Length: 252
Image 1 (cartoon, rainbow, N blue to C red):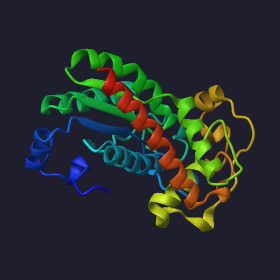
Image 2: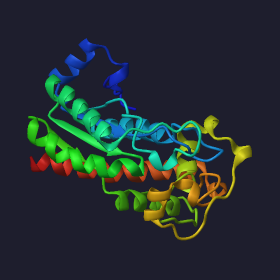
Image 3: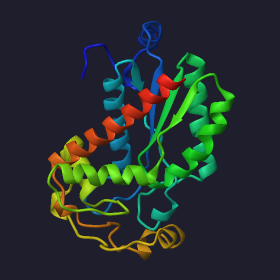
Image 4: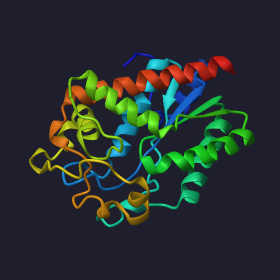
């Protein structure tokens, strides 16, 4: 991390936020995570852990940004058959995103970047971002291309030498690798189990729920995960998103 001061907004005091704004910090990164099942081996806050790590790393790489607290819970109705999952309707999530953006705009941030890390949040973020962007002085940037996100995760696995790829990613090699890299002690390594492998019907998954696809809540094989792959994944996503953010800021 850089020595420019705190990056995570929730750990800053209000005078520190004021000073950061006065010193030219104009971008806030807000991940949009979840509290939902991730198999028998990963914690319910996996998407939130991922969001925290990504937002902080992106903010640090930009050098003039802060990481807002990850928004959660998210839209996780398709996981509700698994105990512990907490879900909100899309309208509630969109209202929360809108309130986040308004608050950051009021304080003087000129760019608010939304980074969903849970698949069920991508559509609501894409829906609300243009509307709230028209309401505010701040530019709202939604990095919410789910296909691109899955591609980046698979690229990170390959870069680390893990020969495993999935079109729909949940609690398998990619996400388990991420948690091994950022919070290794939270992975129940004695509970690693293969889940559903092969093609997945997104329509059935969302319509009937995850339990209709996978009994243990896992897609793929988490046993292929490594901490090195997790680091490669987080770095790959960070690089791609920083490039997108810088392009948006240059354009506006």
